[in-house]
Length: 241
Image (cartoon, rainbow, N blue to C red):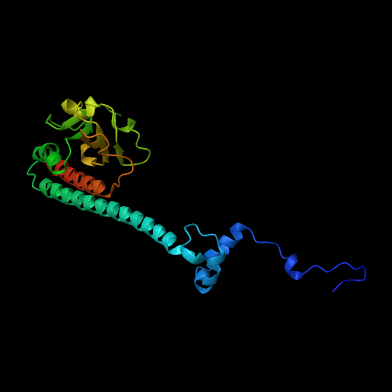
């Protein structure tokens, strides 16, 4: 119809705004079965892949390519997951073996020997030391036991953490002694041993740069440190060091 001026009324369809590309994408995402239920529309679309004979749109090759890419990505992720799971199981096995070995100690000196001399091989690292700051409790000199000046342990960049892992560690003669030139990567763990009356720390070093790094999980290392801490406290409390 037209009004008295002769101008034609706007069609309701014309009054509707044309949807944007993003709005179309959002609608299709919300209705994933639309093309399946309206397959005839595919013939009129410009596909992202080739067109076969007689104007038939070959969406199959596009979907197959996409599926192959997704399978490749999933396969890569699965391989990474399996590798991580195997490594975690291996580390767990090493930690359990290390704790069992620690429990065989018959004295404080024997415990320190096992901790610093026997466990590096079990845990597949190169050096492990027990670091204790100066205290009123006399602690005899023994291999693997590093005496530090008061305040030395607190200078590390703990930032409220109990475990620090560094992929590329600077040399630290006071911590690793004669093995300092061997260490490229290290882990340091705070220990709470009240009977020693001094701050203590467990230091683990590896000759392999990146063996320890900040992104690593600390659950197993924390469990191991807890066992070391409990055993040390027991020996220090019930034995004349």
